Length: 607
Image (cartoon, rainbow, N blue to C red; front, side, top):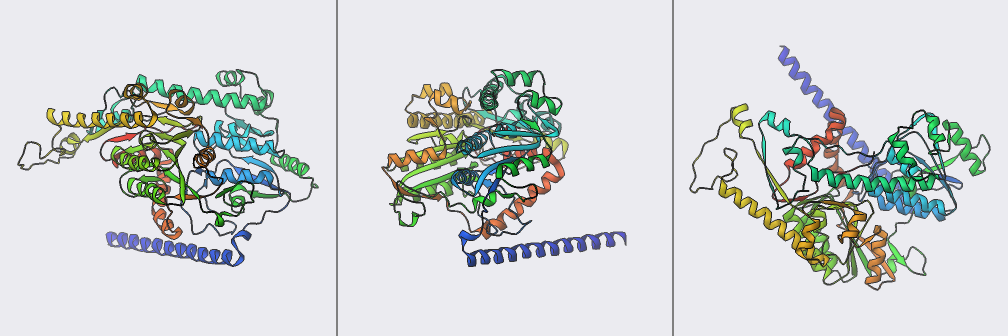
């Protein structure tokens, strides 16, 4: 009877949850349809009103991404029904640029305890804030707590305030990598690792084979965080009028204790409660004490800004429909795999088709590929590289690196006419590896599972879980890895005008930061996506042109339903495991790897 009640309860609960889910989804769909219809009826240009004498509010905690699938709810303007997926970096930068000349926007207020983005994105956001301030408008930053990434951007403001009981973190940078070797030993799994010759820096496999970082890995990571810290501290000290070495002393001696110390050390202008900030804003806006402050978030403001899709020297904006010549911006974002891709992953089939379409389109006069990828499948990378090479033979082919363009991400870019990167872009990692888990102990000794069978040839069971690899098979595998590495070196040598040995000396799996990559010849110039577009226009001898984005994005409703399950899975995973969910996600990514990998081993973030 108890079992019957238990199963009946479980079945009933499941039915209720499913019913509620259907109601919620139906409500969302109805809201999307109604919202879209209302916007269509009113006209897209009227969907967001920017009131005069407004403050533009920038929340640094909202995630910035390279590209985002369109949502069917983009046009819904209902309080409490905001899109929390984040914002595209290009839209953010375009909105800040537009706000400089918008007479309705009087200044920017920066909020956010931490920054949701990469080191490269962090630099681009800070630079945009500085340029906005140079236009003569104010930028005010206020928060109760500042982590280092958020403060780095906030320090560009003309005025920086901290809560009366707040906290500012400035302890220097660190990296931390989780290692799973002991855990794998406990469950009886041994990774069979294959690396190219002398790929001593290719450390993607270290978390599964070691208990700590190798010396070469420590060397390359230390160099990266040293360069990032030097760049960050120099800009903070310049903005805040500090002397050389002040920030190092603050970090080493832990001088930031009570909030008053942040003022005494010159990192913030004053300590205030929020009502003091509001009074400050009213004074800047010329308002009386009881007057309301008009404000608009940058996410909402971006919807009122014309999309930066055309360039026409000496002409007014809004003429893209008259223009014929085009520059194609091709987004290569995420890990590289064979097959189809999406907004968060690169599929060789999808990206190769996008490049091919741009190459054969007579209206497209130049191509700019925006790469933000740690790499992935070597085979898939080669398929994409071939299309990029063919495109570069008939049209200017320029590459712009985002936060990371390493390993396979560099492979697909190597044939470009010119490569632009941010000073903090992570790139290089020219090397390959393969990793095959040997789970015989787990399956046989720990789980009691045995295998048996028959075969026609000595190696017919090559790769079987019932045995490891013999000497001939290991030689075959190592030869495949070596050949793939040599192919990688040849691709880079041809694309960068270097010899095989010159490339090998800076390869071997080593990652480089953007400023160093320029020095060693892997990158041509420090610059943004906009810089790459301008260069492409010059190379194609274009003055008037339109920009198109590829690969073409999915229908908003199709993208919504595809993302729904994935987002639910991630949300539940984060809810159950908290910050540790990231390690489970990485294990899942490793599990999905197929074939030889040209992949960067880690992500580096400034907290």
